[in-house]
Image (cartoon, rainbow over all chains, first blue to last red; front, top):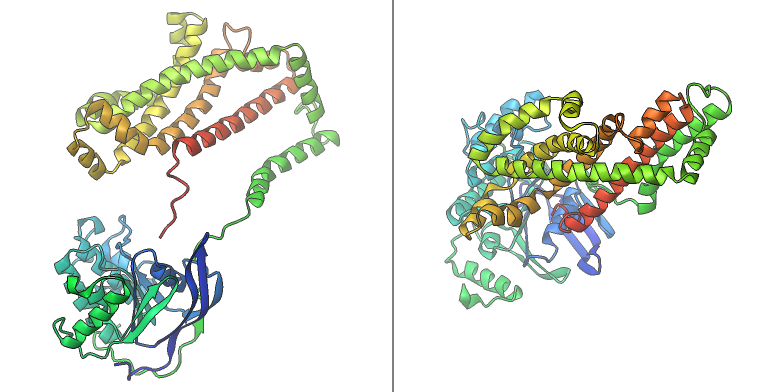
Length: 238
Length: 280
């Protein structure tokens, strides 16, 4: 999968982070290759988002070293669009005027051609999130940070968005860190999945299935069962 | 960015520690020191200017003279009496005026009918400087206490109305909708959901109301008063005492500081849900 690009996109050594008495990241070591789709899986409150926010520069680590590319962009759980600017202005936010064409192309890529003059408030949840995705992609990131970007979407839109993200990442090949608590989403998209539990990686598993992945494939089911058991959920319930 | 982009890059990309974009927590002592910095510099400049004779006492009395004036006023017990008298007038005025403003603001913010009935009049009233009402009020109420309290009340009603209206309009409609669904209407909806949510705006309004009441005191106590901090301003002007003039300024500044401290305290007590929220 990652044979067209090589090298390291993220390098983390001995990362520690605590909030008060609660240590959420306790000596994390992690290397992510260029173009690798890395998924961080875990129940809520385990520090997945904290790890992502440290990579984004939104939190300071308490210890350890963190190295990431300069060109990195984030898509959050909510679209976080500036309501007072039109869609295209949101996509090229902070970029020079010459980025307009690229902004329009990015909107087309996420299936929102013709919506460039719309106001964010008039978009549906899925559309707004696609604008957020276009805003992240137009900067041509070397590292794309996705913080549960599909969690607030309805089930159908979520599947479409996962499809879209898989397709776009295949085309642009940024290194991706996706934070999620959805096991199927993780198995569907990842090159490698890590389950974060009690501040450390409970399990680390490469996923070598061909795309697009069939959720009824026995290998898919085996992965799902493995992750669910590490998350403390009985696989039969799924 | 092109649609058919195929990565061919094999050169390593430079990695670096992510630049921190958040705000760093500063020690609380530093924050307090920074708050005091500008007032202390002003105080030092004042003291230096008057002590070296750069500023003539005719223009601005020095800190020594002002402290002496304060001592004089305190020794006769007048300072306490004046502050008490003014506090009563301001308190009563802000209570009634602010109360009415709050009520009208909630009504206008909550219902379309209320907005239609109340808002145009309040916007017109807001445009009328309350000082322009002084002659009219004197002819109606005389120069006694009623006039003073009514003047301050009228002055305080406008900011309270405007900010409450804004705050109530800003309350998430979805939460109001949900509360209505649980059977809350009228007063229970207003005081159970709307007013607590709009509290930041209402306390902001209270801050402004209290400042406005100080202005009101000067106008109200110019006439028909024998005590009060507004009366003190009039006295200083009549006898051309620059030490008392400056003392008045200092008293107003200290009152401003006290108002700020009190409201901050109220905010902390009345809005315990704030200050614990961080972006996650």
